Image (cartoon, rainbow, N blue to C red; front, side):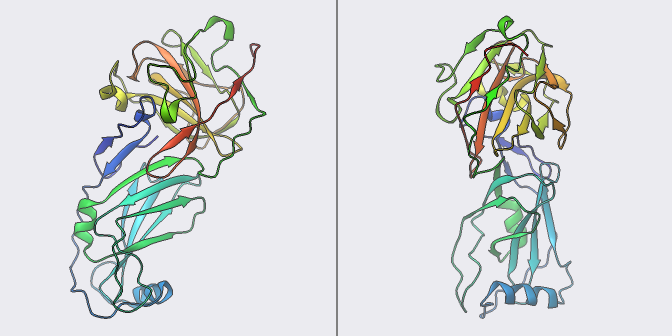
Length: 310
């Protein structure tokens, strides 16, 4: 469910089907910023740091920004008279996302004078629109050259409603066989152990198995194959449920998504058409329910399907 906007994409190697939705981003954005020598004294509190930032008279702009995933969230650097830059992150789309920032240039926000401790990575769970401070840096250009960020949409505090019975996403249900179930030996293990694969010809209508809000989509992939190298081409729809989990539908055909991010969908509503894109050895639909984790990770949860057709 991730994609780059200002940096090339590195596909995660952790999970077979989720690979196409979980891409770690290595930033290559260069900002022409003036470097300042690190002075002896540091601000003692975050509030002091922010006040000094507002009072700064540097000739560079007060903030430099890097956005990801079609501006789902943005990082901002705020300079201060101490020659440090506060790194903060803010979501720009009102959906939850768990992210981890990695940088050898990142330090903890100073709590006392002359205290600057390496941080290396910082987690942020974006559930509000306000900015979240992550740490401080000394050199903006080096930071943007070397930083990486991984994210997963959804809530890390989700508690799956185990009483909910999902609609089979292909109807009538009796006509579409499950060719790989929970704990399937081919690819349903680890974080994706609770997933179902439905064999279906390309172009079969996909219905929402549960009502919710479309939180992510991709439909520009036009390749598919039996190895993880094809994962980045997989098309998908991810729907946020009321309990914070996400229902995710993978391997849709090229331009086979018929819903948009932010759209509310009902149980049984058409959301797209099956395909054979991404890491896929035959035309089918992969469906699973996930809980978001930091470091671009996730975990699937067991769910039950209705016995009858819609």
